[in-house]
Image (cartoon, rainbow, N blue to C red; front, side, top):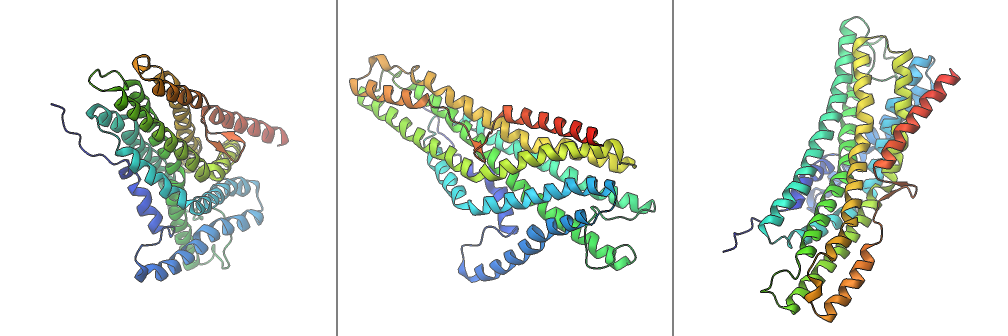
Length: 387
């Protein structure tokens, strides 16, 4: 007797994103009663934070007098600017998110074997969940360390803003002015952190889910025809169902590329530039232990935002490459002529390389990640020579 399969939903891993999108003004409610008030909330939030936060940092960067302030402001300026660009890019492609949800729901229904269900949990659902917790830990760690460094520095007699920036009132000579400016920066960076979280976690988590479903497809394809109790017509129908799932997986990959193309391109460039700038700032301008700790955390956090996406991009690519071997692992020799024709066509299609391209230039894989680190080091050496 075959044990019953507990229904599993891959969409559960994206619950955090749906809730966060709602609170950052990107996903309106389905009820029309609250929709217009939500639009007003979204407009105000995005003008004040998504547009206003990087703008006040950019003006502060332009007005900075010292090199230390320039390097200090440049890192957070580029980070917030990249976050705003990624926020707009993903908002523009939210329809693709719903398309991904529909594909995952459809593929989940084809998980009928207990072993497949367990494999799905291990290679897709749990990996995506761990990825979310990992990036959440890094992002909140960087934010908390920045706030702690600012507060401790203030109690030691040096009350400064978290980041040098422009405000239309005197921040240094007014207690209320400083409190308002500090509160705005604290709230603004928190909103940007959560925007960045969904920007940086959704594409790699979607890639993890895609890689998991491709692994399951490989297992299902390799299993076709080995059960002697199943007739040829049934085996051919099972094989054709795998072909249909393969088409859905290709659409899955295209949807991910449309979502993350611009944002990932910007993230790779900003990460490389910021790493070089932070290293220069650490060596020449940091004068406090807490600021030093913050920028060390910041330096580690930046490449870690890119690494999961590149890692699961490579995993997805390798899983697709295994599909050809899975096709010829099935018991195709004992099948009908129609089955063998379908197999040849499917095998030919499976030879095509499946990768995600960022900005039409960078392949989202580990090769690009290491190239980013090399570019950051090259930029650092260039700045050192210019200095």
